[in-house]
Length: 334
Image (cartoon, rainbow, N blue to C red; front, side):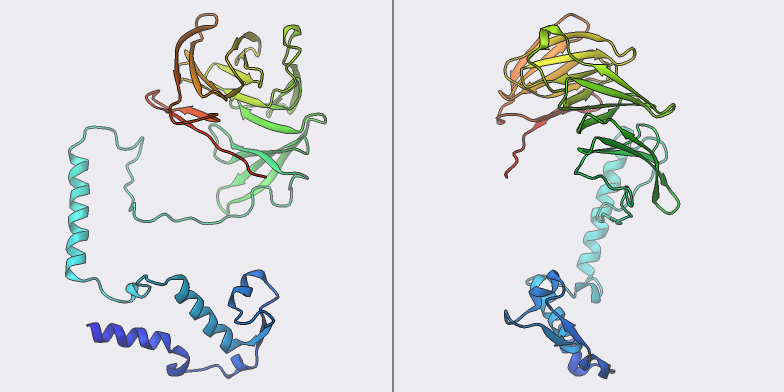
């Protein structure tokens, strides 16, 4: 078996010499290595440019072997050994036994057990193909209940709503909303038909996708004159909030869009999240101290603890069952 493997590998390595058929036109074809950036890695000399088609194939093989150095890149060409088959059967049996030992719900709805050893990814057409923003895309989100609806926003002050065809995975532009005075930094669905839009301004917008109505809302009041940005937007089950660099959290009722009250913490507000019952609100700032507020009572802090191991915590979120709180931080380098 080992001789067979070595002979096969040698045959693959020397495909040009031992091939049963050779295309003579390969020698006549010329390929420029300077034409595309990803071909420059095939150069053997800096001033080299055009090579023949046959030489191009040989260099591609050499590059492939170099990238897979130390790996058994021809393993797929041989049958699995008896030991490998026994190990695979044993792992599969252990997996089935573990499923039988639990009484937890494995899935919601139809049970569909898939092979977890493979992750298949297919690149589809751009969501906003033909309808790009004239700036960076600042947010992207899918509809909370409809997978075929999504929107993008940009610093060009526009929100674009798209419909996705599930048959061929193409998208079409449904609506374009121009806020005219807000380079959009945050946008979130607050229900099945309304999208909150905010940026580095003292006001924000609510866009109704059903009647195509854009409503301007004043976000700040006289005692918040120092606040000049509502770009940090957070949405919960029954409330939405804006966090500010001055440490204020401006809390609004999600259903009637009215301001409830504000909460002040030390430092800036980096992240806010709500539990699924709409009772508790968690917030953290640049001092990595996590505050827990009971929203049923006015400004009532029920807990405060340090985010151990993090400095300047930037993101935080709760699991769906409210059992776990995840935090993280990131840095931008320019």
